[in-house]
Amino acid sequence: MHNERMPRIPAEQQTEAQKRVIAELEAGPRGKARGPWDAIMRSPGLMEQAHKLGEYVRFRSPLEKWIIEMTALMVSRSWTQQYEWASHYPLSIAAGLNASIGDAIAEGRRPDGMSTREAALHDFLSELFVNKSVSDKTYASAVASFGEDGVVDVLGVVTYFTMLAMVMNVSRTPAVNHPPAKTPLIPMPLQP
Image (cartoon, rainbow, N blue to C red):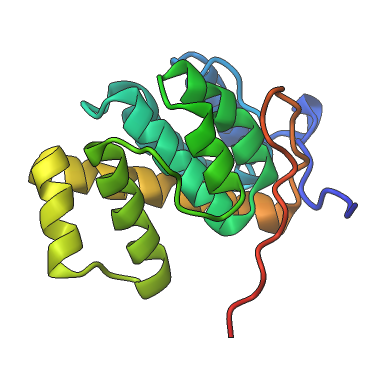
């Protein structure tokens, strides 16, 4: 296990800007600044904007919660991000996603038995992560399932959780333990 590179800055060492943005974040629906925020607080300006995006994505988006949580799982699987996975696996189950879908995502395989909308989301994200774009057929399926506005909001969820995954992978944020999450994620083989 690697040591955490950017642990939480003790309150007595935080700048006024850091204290202000932490207080702002903690006054919102998230409640506590932890995990990725321990590293991100080093840039109060980025933290201020990122937590606002996160509040929209996680708490104000018109997307159904299962869509947000399945997207978070797929992003965390793509980045092998342990903290994000451990945090969002139980949230995905609570949002109505079948555990077998989360377990398949953890294993890096296409889940069996998905609904039409779950399959549309899985295919859209899988293609986006691998090809850095999506085909007309995959796009049309996503629009049929979520609408153009929904597709844009899904991309916002991807953007937010990808940013957090990169920050936590670089800062080596330790994973949290939220059983029954299938953790830790096993690193996927590198693609040539």
